Image (cartoon, rainbow, N blue to C red; front, side, top):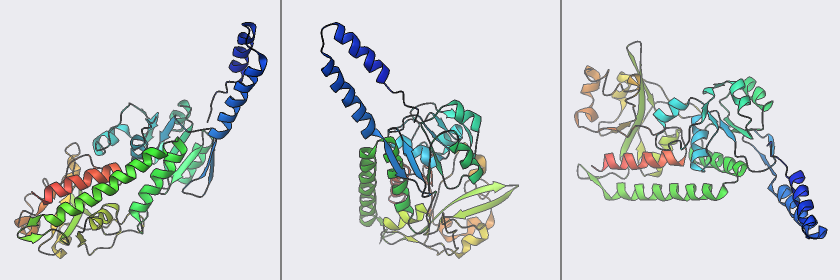
Length: 336
């Protein structure tokens, strides 16, 4: 971190006080205390890529190259000075809204190095999804903290590990503990609410759920299943719900791919949930392109009215803030 040392200022102040009758030994003690504080503030940690990161002290001027790390910073009370695709973040992650107006550093995955350098950041927080060449360039500008984007074997654990790592780098570990505790409380409350609710005279606990998002490209609808290896899939299971997707997801994110015909493989009593966005017409096929589709309309859960659009602005790959908002929206929909 490009922290300004106050040695010269302290010395000047000491001389001024000495001229007013303050003794020199008192000034020495103050200077020693200042130096001790600076030394104790230094931070050394190992990031998600196994690289050692050393900071002069808690980072305050931080740049984020992905939405999930931007969300983590906001959750921890750190307003990023720069962030990737700020407009997109505001559209897709209003569950954890920005409290400032960070400089847009470019797209996720391709940050503008000139823009980042002009911000003179103490720290750049990025993810393992960023190309190695971009990471190399960023490390020439400022210390870089890389977190692992996702882990299909333990999505919630990875999400919280990333939050803790960023908290250590920014001196906000107490806020990370609070965010963790609030998330666990939200999970417990959501599970209890579903266990106590009835739907068609049956307990929701253990009910089958299929969460997806979808996109329209060149008039073709693509459906993306969130399997049990996804973050949302893991949250659903912690809530006591059964993930009924039969397709296989990728190792990192637990995301699959299918089309409207693939939805016919889902059980008849499926609760189908999705997130769209009114600001992105291509991301709302379930109420748009599929509204008149014969296969979609024939699906048992569509006929039964068991299709649930959750609140906009919940980032499906976010942190505990987004996942808490997801729990609230899902429980509200399923218990109506």
